[in-house]
Amino acid sequence: MEIFIKIVQFFLSLSILVIIHEFGHFIAAKAFKTRVEKFYLFFDPWFSLFKFKKGDTEYGVGWLPLGGYVKISGMIDESMDKEAMKLPPKSYEFRSKPSWQRLIIMLGGVTMNILLAIAIYIGMLFTWGEEYLPTESLKYGIVVDSVGAELGLQNGDKILTLDHEKVESFSKIPKKLILDEVKTIQVLRDGQHIELQVPDGYLSILIKQKSADFISIRFPFEVDRFVKNSPAKEAGMEKGDIIVGLNDGPTEFFDEFKTEIQKHKNETVTVHVLREGDSVNIQVLVPEEGLIGVAPVANLSKYFDIKEKDYSFAEAIPAGISKTWYGIGDYFKQLKLIFSPEVKAWESVGGFVTIGNLFPATWHWEAFWRLTAFLSIMLAILNVLPIPALDGGHVMFLMYEIITRRKPSDKFMEYAQVVGMVILFSLLIFANGNDLFKLFTGK
Image 1 (cartoon, one colour):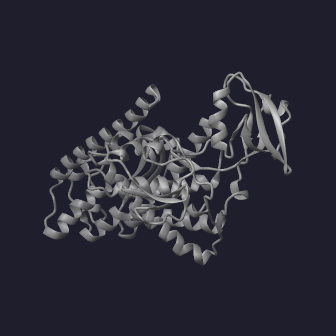
Image 2: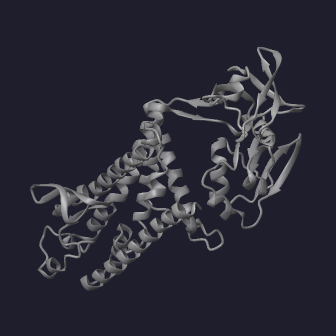
Image 3: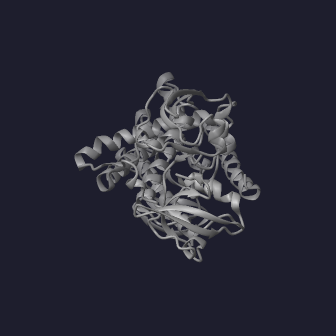
């Protein structure tokens, strides 16, 4: 069921993005009285799932979910309609329009994707506002795994700054470490200010992490719920108990207890808890898996100062534009890392499976729209890259025409389109091949 929900969210998001993108080309073409022969969601080689014709345009849904397209008369595109290009140009064709109009038509899709991201962020901020955990409110410090430890961080460290710059939201620290290629981390450790140097070549290790959990939040272990047949519950532990020790040692925090309990598999241990101010000792038999069937409090607002901000519609507009602007900047930084030979971020590039796994396993509208906004920005930037067959390739040739006042020949454009399609299919195969490799190898 979880996989089904991910798939449905992925295809719904993809459909919205494709329709909005192609509508940008469509509406710009119509504005300059350029005929649009087809408007399709998904591709339709050999047959379509659904279609109808209105005016000069055939609207439909294809069966191959790799995107979508509008077929504009008199334009060399993925349809490779060479016969139509051999006929004399007609006034309603793309090739008959001034270069500046053709440029606007080609930028229509990218423009609509950026506007969609802005609209989504405005709607999200107005509807849900913002909630985040300030970095400075982590009074118990952080917890790190082996990857975080190799950075030089330790459990209990309080991160002050990255390259001497404060990061307001704790959740942004992993992203900033990677995208801004941070060189130093300033922490407070046992009351002392320490500066850590990020090891050379460590960025590629961070990128290969499947999550941002190499740095997480340290918090007290207050019992919130029990799993079925919980050894702790059977031994007398109650919801609301605060675990503070195990046998003769203190375990003030959840991470400490989780680590220590693994050392006592198949043993009876004494768990020290605080219950309504009183100290209680509970004898628990630890099973083979080293877990006693308790879960900590998920809502950490009891321990930390969670910041919440509501937006009026007027306030949400500039904030939504700002989030889109920073999102564009962050994605360009990601592209830079992909092409870096030192970082080798290209090894982590994924296809449809990777994108689909970004969506939550349960339906969550806020998460859905946040991911859709991110993917809209991603689609806009990728489409504007100067690769033939992409919008950016057409824009590149149009800019050449505007500057030199010389139009590339139709034959050259045909060859460029073929080269571009080969590049795109190669990238598609590579990205989805990476997904398959990860699925079969678990890496």
